[in-house]
Amino acid sequence: MDELAVKLFDIQAVKFGSFTLKSGQVSPIYFDFRLIVSYPAILEKVAGLLWKKCSNNATVDLICGVPYTALPIATLISVTNRVPMLLRRKEAKEYGTKKLIEGDFRPGMNCIIVEDVVTTGTSVLETAIELRKLGIQVTHAIVLLDRRQGGKENLSKHGIELSSVFHVEEIMASLEKQSKVDHKVAEEVMNFIRGNRQPILNRNPRLHVSLEERRSSCKHPIASRLFDLMLAKKSNLCVAADLTSLDDVITLAESIGPKIVVLKIHVDILEDFSLTKIMQLKEVARAHEFLLMEDRKFADIANTVQQQFHGGVYRISEWADLITAHPLPGPEMITHMFGDSSSDSRRTCGCVLVLEMSTKNALTNEDYAKEAAKWGLIASDVVTGFVGQSAPQSDFPGWVQFTPGVNSSSVSGDSKGQQYCSPAKAVLERGADIIIVGRGLIKSPDVVATAETYRSEGWAALTQRITNP
Ligand code: S5P
Image (cartoon, rainbow, N blue to C red; front, side, top):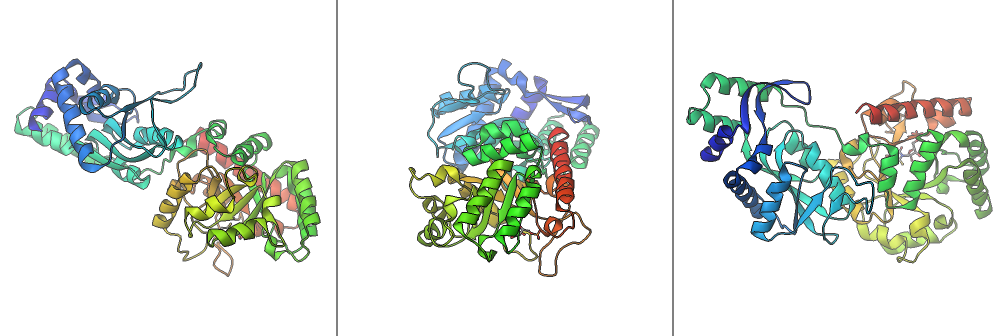
């Protein structure tokens, strides 16, 4: 390792001085591993060390380098070890297939990402997102140098274990030992690195991608439709119409319809439910262009849920565009409740998984949400998004995050465990794409004016998040 550190220094792939980084910070050390391609013996050594890290740690069906520096390294690993490679483009080409990932693979294969330097982990994450969109599993990334500035923790939050050949500390120790740098420089570098350990990133790429781009990642027609409606109506407002009369819900929907993209109901609290009336509500939804969500929160064995969804008095699958479900029973429930692949409801109704709840002392902790988000991706032909209170639960851009517990008034909750935050906080700090507003709107004396206030606040926050990441 000492020898490689010295070689990297000798070819000036590690430099000392004063360097302005992309972030604007002035750093006393700079790594330029692009130079490695000019030194085949070093390239070979680097590829060998990286391969050792990855073959120790994971099943490797495929490898993929983060463009561009890691591409030749990944190629060498691929050829030497006979492990197939995928090629990631930086931009989709304008002509032809528009694919971002080139190569041969099957969904479910495990791909290791190869990178030269990791600082915050964003580039690795972006590559992982592209691979995961295609159903490829990404659980490990290997890197020559981890700058230890939050990357490992950030990637771990997204289910990716990062293994590194070097840390900056090790490079500095080797160079000092070999008298390539004096103690003062080594100290200065270490102080800089320690002082710039960025807080663990909450920079989930999903949060900063344009809605148009996210729409193109959608796997479900209802999610695509939702993005279309958001863009057309400049709204990310879902109103929770928690009224006990369907007639009143219809009246509310007629008045606030132009401001909202989703109307959410709880069908089992309606005292005057009939299929005829729910079809009237569906007509209003069609006329004013919003989606109808039944917040049933299914959570039973598949056989029961299937009957609750399609049968009984409510026949939910005949009219709901979106339904909510708890992931608790596991992915089988979701896949079976929609019926086999020929079932219409697979395309006409999208499932929204409740990964986290807004209530005090909810049991939906981070591990639960993370695990559920993972298998939600497996059922991604029917899952269109999730209900959640924090952004990192899924970085898949084609999924929509619905965040309830939104209320602009100064109340922090109700007296029954509900907790509230403002529209801006929900969008900017918690990752909401859609804000769900219930009593904050339906109890207001002027629902139309209130809907407009929530619409404009929610939309302004979403625009700000996308344009000023
Ligand atoms: O965690 C959750 C999930 C949901 S879907 N917390 C919630 O409050 N909800 C729903 O959002 C809840 O069932 C209700 O319909 C709405 C919140 O209503 P509010 O009146 O408290 O804004």
